[in-house]
Amino acid sequence: MSESIHLVFNVDGNNFASAGTASEEVKSKLKMIGISSADIRRVAIAMYEGEINMVIHAGGGEAIVDIFLDRIEILLADHGKGIEDIEQAMQPGWSTAPDDIRALGFGAGMGLPNMKKYTDEFRIDSTVGVGTNVYMTIKFN
Amino acid sequence: MTVYDVIKALDAEEIYIADDGREITSGYAGDFLSHVMGRAPADCAWFTIMNNVNVCAVATLADIALIVLCEGVQPDDNLLAKVKIQGFNVISTKLDIYNAVVAFDRALR
Image 1: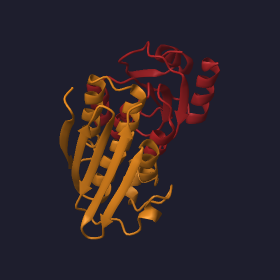
Image 2 (image 1 turned 30 degrees about the horizontal axis):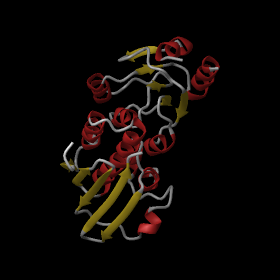
Image 3 (image 1 turned 180 degrees about the horizontal axis):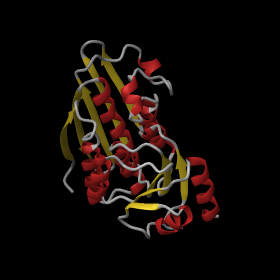
Image 4 (image 1 turned 45 degrees about the vertical axis):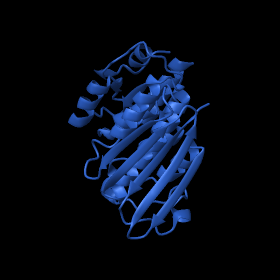
């Protein structure tokens, strides 16, 4: 494998049915290059939660993925309304998702905590009215 | 136990079966998708009444072995189409979640 694989995905903000497409493609790519199923699972869940967040809260965005021999780096970038209080948003159970989203099974306030749980490095940069960047790194065991 | 064993134990309807020999080592019950992703172990049977298309994405990404729709719930059209494309195991049982889990647990032991 060359030094890294660079992938860029557009996450459609209006389509719940297609949410997860980027995560599924990354999952197949990792499987193809022989990453362990436990590591793939961590990547897939963290990235899917991020995709869903972009659909629910930000009208979509971009997922930029770099796969190295020993790790994967994921940047989820959106131009949504931003997060006012990141510490509060990270609390399990805290959610601003509307009722129609909850009816689909989302909005339990576990998305960001799950992303942190399954990643080795996790950082959020957000500016209200400008957008949010979520940086995640998962090391391959 | 296998997907086939669960179908028998729950007297369940086969909605779509991609691999009835897939091993199942544990179970998880719940409808909030992020709880499922945070807590359901890989290779489990997932008991839920949620039937929209995101159920398949969650199950696939979390390496769940089998979706068990309880209370006679049927997949909506988008979910059915997606499980056929993804090649995922889905069954439906008339039992409610509690009784489905009890029957599953008996068979698992």
